[in-house]
Image (cartoon, rainbow, N blue to C red):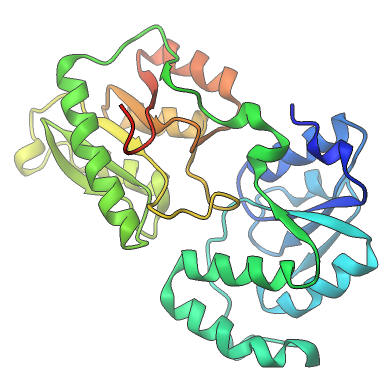
Length: 290
């Protein structure tokens, strides 16, 4: 576990969305004697009661203007953006405070430009107040998936062809800020991640198994990787037990992620489940490396 938070002064805040990541970070910080202050994105966290065990506040997405005053009030020196946000703020319901008014056009432009632009705008807004934004992996580096095969099962030659096809496709849609994942079957990409996320992608592949060119084809691979130019302090691709379950239901042989640029949530349980279901999990060399 990283010692950076413990070695610096001040407190750490988590701006928490959905998924397991905010909970993992909160538990990690509490374990080193630094329970976090949690800003819960209202309506985005599946089980807010877990995070409400820590000092917290719950805000609508449209209340972003309250974030910086809260950070100052709580003596926060570091912020982690963690978890998924299923919806985007509604401009018509936006509630800026006076100091935020000059930034409203920038937020509106970022909303129109895509997730990366919005994340960079939020990070800039926070850091302009003298608060450092750090990545989840800087607190819990063990969350990063390392290079190599982590399961008993290893990818076959056909799996490696699927990995290459899906990796190229995932990088291509990442360049367009569309998604971070792709599925390849029979050496060709058959599905790309969109707004529905990885779980939705896998459900779509499962539904397509009996249709057209996929009918009768077995196997296939899910690949997740960071977008080109990814803001590594937020929105790193991640996999968990649910990803393994979804890949199995979709009839895939395994999952590949970009090593050191993807998070494995509940990694021990994830690998145990993959072994039980006969799937492989592999960390690929980062793009441009061999």
